[in-house]
Length: 77
Image 1 (tube, one colour):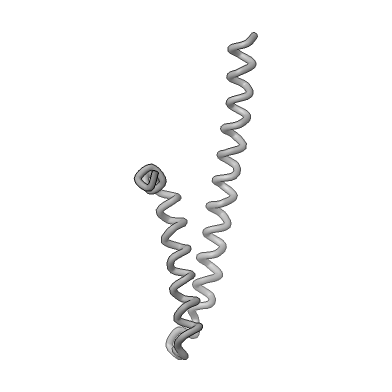
Image 2 (cartoon, helix red, strand yellow):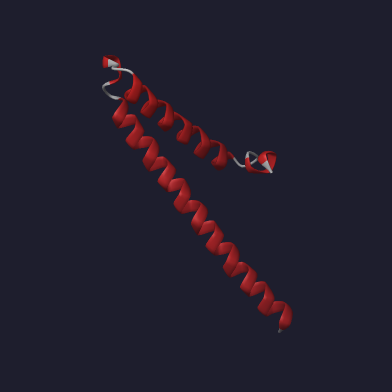
């Protein structure tokens, strides 16, 4: 299951973005790091990228359902 999930580039990118956001959050919780002042901007960018990926995944799932309905109509007709 894990190999199948990580065979898609978007899943790998989604995982990397999630891990980066979690690491930044942990750094902010446990450390007072002054050189990371611009990091919240990066996390916003990563969250935006993750949102775009999720929208694309939902769109692809919708297209797959529509294609399945079309195939069933062609086969039954």
